[in-house]
Image (cartoon, rainbow, N blue to C red; front, top):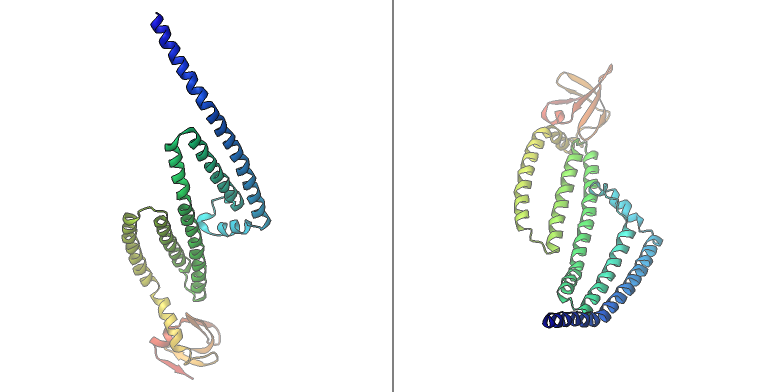
Length: 269
């Protein structure tokens, strides 16, 4: 009985000793967490107000203009301030863990903090790359529209997503993620899609391409006001664009594909 009481007393005494040893460390850790929270909140608030003051919202509008970002309600000022807040808090947490002797958890958080610059640079690279892809998409679509190619939006959309995919793979590599298998599979898939698309579009747009090429060959040979005859059709040229020529035959106007001026015998009156 006395032995049992003595053992329990030793256990209780050891527990009290350990608690008394850890209490100052725990109190200091809590103080550091509280101070870190105050600093993080203050810095985040200052960053948020500064970004609002310089009108960082234009970045959000640019993001919303891109199709793949339209569903995301991104607010750059809030995202940046929250990021700064958690970086400061993680630094305070690692300091508190070091005081408590929890070095394993501390090392894990330190590794995550060290990885953040690489992760953030990869995200920024992806966003900037998507902006560039969107600009190229708009320029390509406008160019195709000016040439009268009806499938311009489809082609520009394909170019956009192809570039986004390339930027995504590069961003993943920059973030330290091995993308060798992903790259191989995507390369095979894109090659197959591109071949099928090119083949189908080649058949569908051969007349359009013939008209576009004809516009270069006929621009110095024919002009508005000329009276021409193509087969059984005769009239005065009243309009010419990159794909067609319009003839005024007196009682009606006839629109003909431009390649007819190259592939047929034309009499100029």
